Image (tube, rainbow, N blue to C red):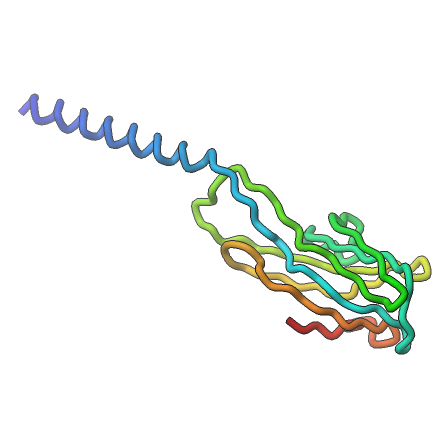
Length: 149
């Protein structure tokens, strides 16, 4: 009887050690993940292209004015802009691989900040889409852009 308990304790010890070793090994891997879409678009005011307007991309939750933006771009003479996706490096593998990703695109035009587009996604892996924004600041402040994928 005592021998069975000793053998059981050894098996539990070995399994615990192996499980810990496997989890530790997995947690040291790094993973790059895009946490926002890639944005292309055009910015206008009453159908007139806006040149040299600052475009900002924020992934901070609730940052509707892009005060903590991580990516920046400017419009060209035709009002076109492009913002590459934000990619973050994770030094762990999440146990549950679902994340809430949020993003906001803003512009600074005539010393006023406009929120152009805001969205989120709850899921796993990369935010793999690209979004095209057709924006006109003469439209409603609540929805100055028409988004297409």
